Length: 488
Image (tube, rainbow, N blue to C red; front, side, top):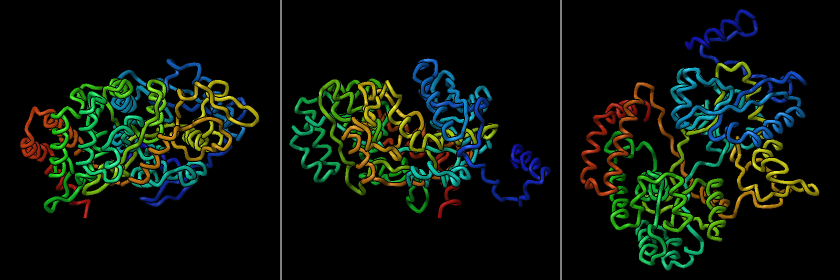
């Protein structure tokens, strides 16, 4: 038994408050609406989130803290919200390390990966009993989030399914003769013809670009080639789809795009900033961005730089048709509560408030007098509104837009959300035990190396067989044996 859980149970038993059989669930937390803190004696809740930095954005975050505290106080919950700065370095890498070593110890913490080992060590709180007693969170939680939390209840992210949606300038799309055929039947061949016309017409230097990896390409083409899940059954055994014939066929297609100058030949060295710059400036015609908020940003910047809206494109059609499968094994990012926190109920109350009507307005519309003004009972968005982004829940669920004057989301952003819902596919992965994680990391590194070399023509496609051999030796065979014990 985890030492912390043992101590907690012992204390509860001594107090006589519980009689708990081995293996039963802990008691549900106290109600999180009201009854926390009191006027003049608020409960301090520390919060850490990527790109939410009180040093670089002191003024607006100070106003946000105050607005949240005052809003919660009206509902009888008194907290002192303290927003923390993240350690220097790559957030996804340094934050879990700093948390494990107690360099940082926030009550509420946003992770963008590498949280699973922490949960396995008992450092993150199981959020199930909090969700069960919630009102606001339940009301805006999507089905994909419910599925993910059922599998992994330590991380919560109330947002649309994180799908990469392909977009391009609407005026350019209208000029392409191949565009109609693509919309009517978006096969891989029709996508290829579409890219060829972009290139040969001189419209752009590259038909498509991406930010150093192929995830944004995969969202368009994975299903067409038969890569419909992370783990598939091939030749009678469970394997990762990266090492299958379907993966080989897809990489051969990407290599063809690269060789013919349709895929940005500089994509490996591009960051998201330089990728976006090449898109706005017109050297690349086609990119993928996360449905909803990111597509909205892309659209706003394209209107600002080129005066045109974006056009949302469908996923390629073949063996199947969908954007990338959404892993509901666990959320890839989201908020967790520190299991050592002394103010868990207050931390949850903050999440619950931000999921409610007042919190949604504050989170999505921003700050009064800066991002919107109240005029005649209406929330009139200002020119500064596009610079605001939600600091808690990106979802549009729960936001009443009937009294909003202005565009919370552009039409292309709404179209991207509709497309994500239409072409949604769920993917259930397997959470590996901690002793297999280093092997999986080594396998993933091999895939990145070989896939990049094959696409760029540094290696021939025949080297894919060599990759599979090394993949299996690095851990593929061992993990397949483990998968056989948990998958039927």
